[in-house]
Image 1 (cartoon, rainbow, N blue to C red):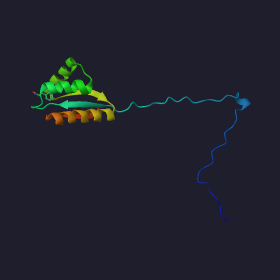
Image 2: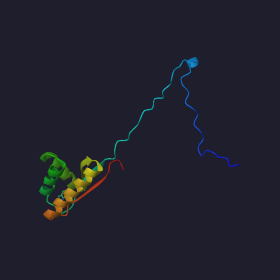
Image 3: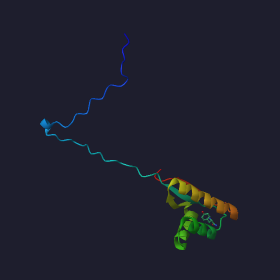
Image 4: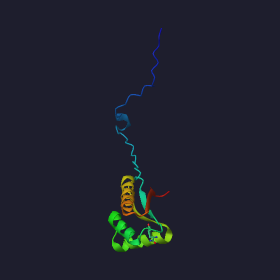
Length: 120
Ligand code: TYC
Protein backbone atom coordinates (compact mmCIF):
# COMPACT_ATOMS: atom_id res chain seq x y z
CA UNK A 1 0.00 0.00 0.00
CA UNK A 2 1.34 3.42 -0.97
CA UNK A 3 1.70 5.85 1.91
CA UNK A 4 1.49 9.57 1.38
CA UNK A 5 4.01 11.34 3.59
CA UNK A 6 3.20 15.04 3.76
CA UNK A 7 6.20 17.08 2.61
CA UNK A 8 5.61 19.69 5.32
CA UNK A 9 4.51 18.97 8.89
CA UNK A 10 0.99 20.21 9.45
CA UNK A 11 0.64 23.49 11.33
CA UNK A 12 -1.16 23.12 14.65
CA UNK A 13 -4.69 24.48 14.27
CA UNK A 14 -5.23 28.03 15.52
CA UNK A 15 -7.14 27.84 18.79
CA UNK A 16 -9.82 30.38 19.60
CA UNK A 17 -9.26 32.32 22.85
CA UNK A 18 -9.91 29.97 25.79
CA UNK A 19 -12.30 31.57 28.31
CA UNK A 20 -10.67 29.44 31.08
CA UNK A 21 -7.40 31.28 30.38
CA UNK A 22 -9.00 34.67 30.57
CA UNK A 23 -9.87 34.72 26.90
CA UNK A 24 -7.09 37.15 26.09
CA UNK A 25 -4.89 37.18 23.00
CA UNK A 26 -1.27 38.25 23.37
CA UNK A 27 0.10 40.19 20.40
CA UNK A 28 3.86 40.25 20.06
CA UNK A 29 5.27 43.73 19.41
CA UNK A 30 8.12 43.81 16.94
CA UNK A 31 10.00 46.98 16.11
CA UNK A 32 10.69 47.13 12.40
CA UNK A 33 14.16 48.46 11.68
CA UNK A 34 14.83 49.91 8.24
CA UNK A 35 18.37 50.79 7.22
CA UNK A 36 18.84 54.22 5.65
CA UNK A 37 20.05 53.98 2.03
CA UNK A 38 23.77 54.02 1.31
CA UNK A 39 24.86 57.56 0.45
CA UNK A 40 27.65 58.58 -1.93
CA UNK A 41 30.05 61.50 -1.69
CA UNK A 42 31.16 63.27 -4.82
CA UNK A 43 34.82 64.32 -4.72
CA UNK A 44 36.72 66.56 -7.06
CA UNK A 45 40.44 65.95 -7.55
CA UNK A 46 43.22 68.46 -8.00
CA UNK A 47 45.28 68.83 -11.15
CA UNK A 48 47.85 71.38 -12.34
CA UNK A 49 45.95 72.69 -15.36
CA UNK A 50 42.26 73.36 -14.69
CA UNK A 51 41.80 77.08 -13.88
CA UNK A 52 40.61 77.81 -10.34
CA UNK A 53 37.80 80.01 -11.69
CA UNK A 54 36.42 77.12 -13.75
CA UNK A 55 36.36 74.82 -10.71
CA UNK A 56 34.54 77.47 -8.66
CA UNK A 57 31.89 77.89 -11.36
CA UNK A 58 31.43 74.11 -11.68
CA UNK A 59 30.98 73.72 -7.91
CA UNK A 60 28.42 76.54 -7.87
CA UNK A 61 26.54 75.23 -10.88
CA UNK A 62 26.37 71.50 -10.13
CA UNK A 63 26.57 71.42 -6.33
CA UNK A 64 24.41 74.46 -5.54
CA UNK A 65 27.09 76.28 -3.53
CA UNK A 66 27.41 80.05 -3.24
CA UNK A 67 30.59 81.77 -4.38
CA UNK A 68 32.17 81.74 -0.91
CA UNK A 69 31.56 78.02 -0.23
CA UNK A 70 32.59 77.06 -3.78
CA UNK A 71 35.84 79.02 -3.40
CA UNK A 72 36.54 77.35 -0.03
CA UNK A 73 35.97 73.87 -1.52
CA UNK A 74 38.13 74.67 -4.57
CA UNK A 75 40.99 75.84 -2.32
CA UNK A 76 40.69 72.69 -0.20
CA UNK A 77 40.99 70.56 -3.36
CA UNK A 78 43.97 72.66 -4.50
CA UNK A 79 45.74 72.28 -1.13
CA UNK A 80 44.72 68.74 -0.04
CA UNK A 81 44.42 67.08 -3.44
CA UNK A 82 40.68 66.42 -3.13
CA UNK A 83 37.50 67.51 -1.33
CA UNK A 84 33.88 66.48 -0.99
CA UNK A 85 31.53 68.67 -3.05
CA UNK A 86 28.29 67.00 -1.90
CA UNK A 87 26.64 63.82 -0.61
CA UNK A 88 23.75 62.20 -2.52
CA UNK A 89 21.93 58.96 -3.29
CA UNK A 90 23.84 56.79 -5.77
CA UNK A 91 21.89 57.85 -8.88
CA UNK A 92 22.24 61.55 -8.13
CA UNK A 93 25.96 61.22 -7.27
CA UNK A 94 26.69 59.38 -10.53
CA UNK A 95 24.79 62.08 -12.46
CA UNK A 96 26.82 64.86 -10.78
CA UNK A 97 30.08 63.11 -11.74
CA UNK A 98 28.86 62.82 -15.36
CA UNK A 99 27.87 66.48 -15.46
CA UNK A 100 31.23 67.67 -14.09
CA UNK A 101 33.26 65.43 -16.43
CA UNK A 102 31.16 66.51 -19.41
CA UNK A 103 31.57 70.22 -18.61
CA UNK A 104 35.34 69.79 -18.08
CA UNK A 105 35.74 67.81 -21.30
CA UNK A 106 33.79 70.39 -23.33
CA UNK A 107 35.95 73.18 -21.87
CA UNK A 108 39.14 71.21 -22.58
CA UNK A 109 40.18 70.81 -18.91
CA UNK A 110 41.47 67.59 -17.30
CA UNK A 111 39.36 68.07 -14.14
CA UNK A 112 38.59 64.73 -12.46
CA UNK A 113 35.56 63.91 -10.35
CA UNK A 114 34.65 60.63 -8.59
CA UNK A 115 32.02 59.30 -6.22
CA UNK A 116 32.36 56.73 -3.44
CA UNK A 117 30.15 55.30 -0.69
CA UNK A 118 30.15 57.31 2.53
CA UNK A 119 31.64 55.56 5.62
CA UNK A 120 34.02 53.20 3.89
N1 TYC B 1 45.37 73.28 -9.03
C1 TYC B 1 44.64 74.06 -10.03
C2 TYC B 1 45.45 75.31 -10.38
O1 TYC B 1 46.39 75.65 -9.69
C3 TYC B 1 43.27 74.48 -9.52
C4 TYC B 1 42.35 73.32 -9.28
C5 TYC B 1 41.55 73.30 -8.15
C6 TYC B 1 42.25 72.30 -10.22
C7 TYC B 1 40.68 72.26 -7.93
C8 TYC B 1 41.36 71.23 -10.01
O2 TYC B 1 39.70 70.22 -8.67
C9 TYC B 1 40.58 71.25 -8.87
N2 TYC B 1 45.07 75.95 -11.47
